[in-house]
Length: 253
Ligand SMILES: Nc1ncnc2c1ncn2[C@@H]1O[C@H](COP(=O)(O)OP(=O)(O)OP(=O)(O)O)[C@@H](O)[C@H]1O
Ligand SMILES: [Mg+2]
Image: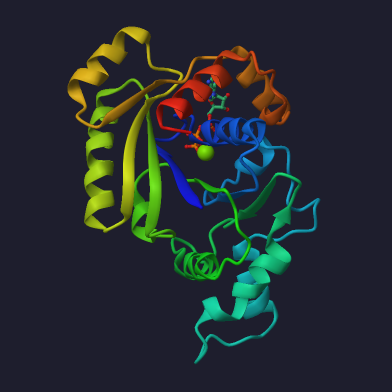
């Protein structure tokens, strides 16, 4: 069971990438997958066509709120993660034919994800179902690296956009991941859909990390996201999907 994580600055295309990666694995028959949405904005569900609420599922933050605040539970003595760990799989997990989905949800306590993160981490350690791949969609920035939801991952895909800051982001991201001792096997750099082709040469020259290629700009992706249509249904001829397929092949999938 391999863990793959997206990373990058705001709006660089992380969630779209994870959704298209999901489509790739499904088409290859590399299932079941576990999709984890760590972003409080929770776009991943929408992009793969799942509304957790409609499915009667709760985010980890909602579960914690229920247990500790509304349920009158106390946080004294028992580690919170142990109290809701099993609930995450019972009430938080959407289970589908080829992929399951769980979301951390909105901020539990303003500015602090400690409880939901600890709960998710614990739950993941006790994971009994065997997934082919665990795909984690991260929020923008690097803070989530400190949250260390997964301390061991296989591949990090850092998606960059066309700015000087992005070049710095990649280097910092790599450094921070090392510093907080996330154990990863590969750190891949991916050019986001806004990166002009001429910049690719510069990326390869300037960045010492493994460069996988660029996600093609695709008007259809924009349309699907705008209208809330699941990206899993985008035609296999989609330029964005094709580039993701090539990237994944290059990464050995
Ligand atoms: N390949 C693409 N072609 C065209 N538009 C795209 C592509 N990928 C993403 N977009 C557009 O960019 C927007 C942002 O993409 P996405 O939500 O995947 O970025 P993100 O990095 O996850 O953002 P955030 O930092 O807010 O989580 C999407 O709403 C979509 O309209
Ligand atoms: Mg996102």
